[in-house]
Structures are given as C-alpha cells and as structure tokens.
Image 1: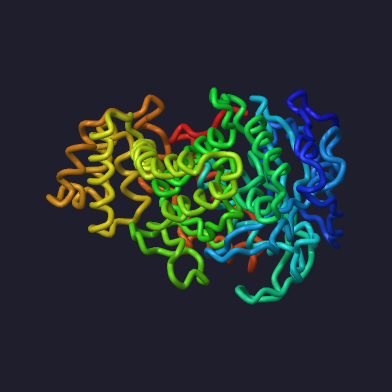
Image 2: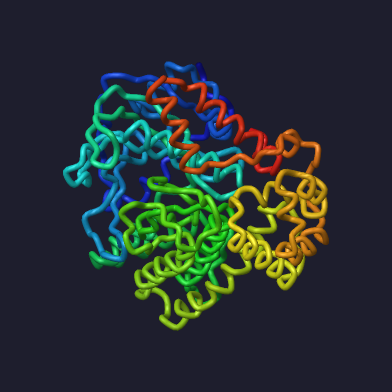
Length: 475
C-alpha cells in the first residue's frame, strides 16, 4: 500500500556524522504479534495507510522507511546517573530507526526500545519486557491527554522470547516498542563531547540543535549562539517540569541522559502518578534517598541544566550561563501557575491570582489527602464546574471550611473556551486515573488472561478524557 501524502521522510541526524552514532543491526525475533498501533500519531507522519503486515515489517523487522535512514543508528552519549558520571552509556537496547516530518513540518524521530544489542549494551540483552512496553504506552497516553509535552508510544509488537529480570516475575514476555518523539538528542549527548574534548563536534552540535529544533531562535548580535540556545532549552525544560507537577507525575529517573534537548518528556521506566499530593513520593524502588521524588523534580531538572551549562563554557560566558540558571526558578514557578490553570480548566489571569489559586488548591490537596486526580476533575472549568463539584460524591469535602479559600478562588475563574459541562467525561462522575493499582490490574488481565481488550478499553477512557480537556489535534 502506498504511503499517504503526509509521509515526508528525513535523515537529518546523519548530517552530524559518525562521531555521534554507530550503525547497528536490529535483532531477529522468533515472533511478531502486533499489540498496539497508534493510528492517530501515524496519521501525522503519513504512516496510517500501512497494512498490518507492512507495519510489522517496518516496526518489528525494521525494514527501512523509503527516503529515511538506510540503517538504524545507536546514538552515543554519556550522563550523570543519580549524580554519578557514567561515560559508558549510549543506546544499549534501542536505536534511531527513522526520521520524518509531521504535518506541521516539524522533524520527528522514530526510536526503539528492546530492538537488540548495540555496542553500548554493557552486557545487557538489549530486550524489553512486554510489561515495560505496556507501561510506556499507558504513561505516554495519559501524559498526552493531560497536556504534557511528551513522546508518543507508536507501536508495540510482542516478540516471543522469555526474558529473565530481577525486578519482576521471570521468565517474562518480550516486546519491541517504537516511540515517536521530537528528538533523541539529550543533555548527555553534549556531555560526551565535552568529556572527550571534542570541541569542534560540540560546536557543530550546538548549531545543529539550534537550526533543527529551535528554528525560530535568532542568534543575538554578539553572535553567542550557545547562550541563546541554552536559554531556550531552560525555558522548555521548565515548562515540561511544571506540566509533570500539575499532572501529578513522577518520572522516576531524571538522569542527564533522560533529559531531551527539546524539553520533551520521554523514556518511561519506573514512573508513577501520585495517589495523593505528597512531595516525598518516589517512583523508583532503587531511588533510596528520594533524589527524584515528586517534590524534588524541579531541583533535579535545574541540576541537570547546570551540567549542560558546563558543556557550553567553551562557547558562552560563565556569567551569562549563570544568569540564565539563576532565572530558572522564577521561570518554572510561572510555568507551574499556567500548568495548574490548564489542569483546572480555567483561563490564566495575573501572576498574583494564578499563584494564589495554585497555592490554595495544592495546599488543600496536601492537607486533606484527597486523591490527586479527583479535585482537578471535579472542579475542571472553575466556575463552570462548581455545581458539579458541590453536588458530586466529594461535595461535603468542598463545602468544608478548609476548602473555603480554594473554593472562593475557583468560583471566580472562567472556564477555558473548550470546556463543556455536558461532555460525557464529566457527566460520568468518575475521573480517569493511572495509579499503580490500575496499571497492575490491567497487566494482570493481559498476562494471565491475554485480555488485550482491557488495554483498548483503558485507552478509550483516556481518549475520552483528552477530548474533554481539548488536548488532541485532529490528525
């Protein structure tokens, strides 16, 4: 079947040259059973017209897409892992499979997870568990629906191998995942070049990133391209960090190799959504000191940005980089105000009123112990949601004096233009959640009963929420 007119292949990453990647071969799998196909995302890059067999050929056997990369590329990078520098990283179980431009002309990557060993596998098997693939689908879908700038799970194919893992019952089923994202260049990409004193290559990377991912960013009169880029990256990272916080999302592993240079959220491993507002909630069982706990995520992002600044000292003044970093907290706070306005479905106002609303709502959530996902659902639309909230199952809680300040501020706020009180999502009376109990119950149906309809039902529920929140663009 021919590709649609929206198919625009690209191979921009090869312009960087072989210093940035290794050409690799995908693994051969004993089975290819398509478990998930993101047709909405596929339509934006002209791949929705593929038959199932063609889909599996490209995203299970990794036959190159015509006009895109002729061979998969395992990307090279270093990184700080829990603040310990590791020079032995790189794509160890994934690769950059293809690049395309979407219907807006934006360059996107199709990257893999579980596609086999590479020079950077460090003794690992290069595989992905089926459960890990399902979890990435759920995380990315939920975050996209909540308005977080995220990569999207594109394809999941079960591959018929039995994997041994120390952190889940084994042997366990295997899969290969493909994600669609804005970029797989990360802070660790810069760190590798800086650590190896590859100054010219680092300068080349700065220019490439600015031209490719920040095309509207003008170089200042003093010609300091690196400083301008750094400021733009800080702005994007502040925004996505604020979006996580308003979503109640804990990424779990905020190492420098997991921070994309575009500020897009990606690579979902031990993530969790908060059951209740708890600054100390930690997602990863191995994060013993809570370094990446919910409330410490903004500080983790700032620390990572400081590592990027160190890589740019060759090209940008120390004082300028320090000044940009010093402005990050205020920038993040404003992004957090706006993210909470979006989460509550109200129109932004002044800094003072938006911040007062955010503080009042989150303080009540923290002190009352209300499930994190409930209040934004009940009060979505501000004044437009007041009647629904007060007459719903948590109405007594909202009539309590402890909620008086937050209620007064919410009742003064106009809903966003897309809000409809009659939307089926709101009339259902129950918010969509992605708590660990929900995820584990879903996985039990998949693993024990091979009930894949359960995943479809959950994704349909997420789609309904996304539609109510006005998140999805038409393909």
